[in-house]
Each structure stands twice: as structure tokens, then as C-alpha cells.
Image 1 (cartoon, protein in one colour):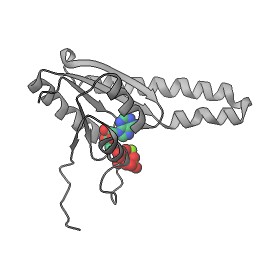
Image 2 (cartoon, rainbow, N blue to C red):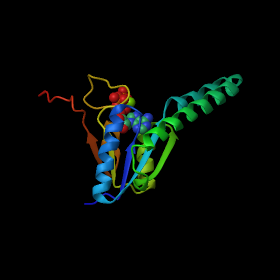
Image 3 (cartoon, protein in one colour):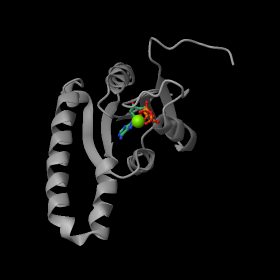
Length: 156
Ligand SMILES: Nc1ncnc2c1ncn2[C@@H]1O[C@H](COP(=O)(O)OP(=O)(O)OP(=O)(O)O)[C@@H](O)[C@H]1O
Ligand SMILES: [Mg+2]
């Protein structure tokens, strides 16, 4: 099976960079295209603050604008890891990461999602990051989980 549309969720951790590099190789091999998505969760929750406290609206809007601007810059940096002819799109969404990732995959008829088993918070005790866990269980397309080289198999 060839994967023509590959989605790579990015949380700007080095783990997501590694998954992106794997996706690039796969896209070259499959003659496919890469889509990148970053989902802002904190800012999505912040919007609710001024719903409850209207005087904060202006401050919230300013923080929101600066925050999204910063994320756009970071996404531009990550775009450089993908050869221009392979990149089909790079978007920033707001909401719950796994929901926005799966919604985007369905809207664009993505065939494969490539993501890392770990992310920004890198919780050592968990087997798998919660975003990857939910996406792999709930997405209807194929999901490739790229593991960290430090990962060790521990029975039980
Ligand atoms: N906000 C996000 N936007 C896009 N992709 C994300 C986002 N959060 C996580 N991901 C993707 O999921 C991968 C694993 O991150 P995940 O959030 O599952 O684990 P974690 O951050 O280590 O733990 P936690 O469950 O505490 O968040 C990341 O490398 C990235 O590919
Ligand atoms: Mg995370």
C-alpha cells in the first residue's frame, strides 16, 4: 500500500522532529506529500478565561496574538526539515490535539499519520504519550509510531 498523503503532528519536541524525518523518507519512497499540524491546547483553554471574566478580553486577545505568532515562527523552522516539493501544507489549529489531528486527517483523506511515541512532556512512567495513544486508537487511517532510540523493552 502506498501512502500518498502523510500527516505529521508537531509539538516542537525533538521527538516530533524525529518523526518528521522518518515521514520525509517515507514520502520520498511513496512519492507522497507531507502535511504538518500543530495544535494549540493552552491557548484554546485560555479563551475560556475571558468568557468568565469579560474585563480580561483585551489582555487575552493580545496574549493570543503573540502566542500564535510565536508558534507560527516555530512551525516555519520545522518546515525547513521538509523538502519544499514534498510539503503540501502546515497548519496551526486550536483545540484538543488528538481531536484536531483526527479531524484534519479525515478532512484531507490522509492515508498515514506518522508521530512519535513521546512528546513535549515526555512522561517517563507512561508507556505512550496521551496524544499518540488517543490518535492511534481513534484514527481510522494507519498510524506509524516512531520510537525513541533510548526506549528499552521491559517485560511486564
Ligand atoms: N499539541 C500537539 N500538536 C500536534 N502534535 C502533537 C501535540 N501534542 C503531541 N503531539 C504529537 O504527539 C507526539 C507524542 O506526544 P504526547 O503528547 O502523546 O506525549 P507527551 O507529551 O510525552 O505526554 P503527555 O501525554 O503528557 O502529553 C508528539 O511527538 C507529537 O508528534
Ligand atoms: Mg504532550
